[in-house]
Picture (cartoon, rainbow, N blue to C red):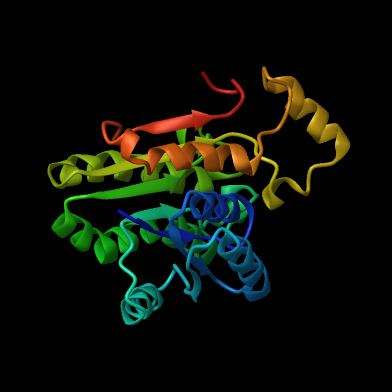
Length: 244
């Protein structure tokens, strides 16, 4: 049976790598993007080269109405995702004392509440089909905490707990729910690091390098497969040994 995947944050970084990989595996792919239409269009072109259908849907994951609009748009197209990969995310660097409340709310709404919306909108049909896969992109900071990234770490820690809870609720419908917890991955989030910062980071990671978005995509690829049907409620690290 051909599966249909929805990838949030699919216009760049890890989300784009996941979308391309799932398309390469023969899955039709819907890409959610917020504002980067040209980048989303480029990912769509890449996906279509594998002979699958691909669409891009704009949505602001901070807003209930916008996420519901995304669901309605996919309904109009006749798309019923049975794979949902939540890669969209926001980050903020700075001390909590200096953080505006709106920044905190935005991070929680995209990173954590976005997972709630995706589960509410797309979970019922998976239950009816008695098959589904949810994979949430977490972070090493959600497991160990991070000075200067309190909101980000808290949102990802909450996402890990949400993953376990939904795995328990949805198991009877043969829906698996897992999180992938990357460490330092070569994406836009690390472009601000200078050479000195990079060298120090390499020194903290036993494998001595940054991970690649394609490596995360390969893990997601397995978690959404038929073969991963006995894996659920897990937060799986991918960090070069940075956290063991």
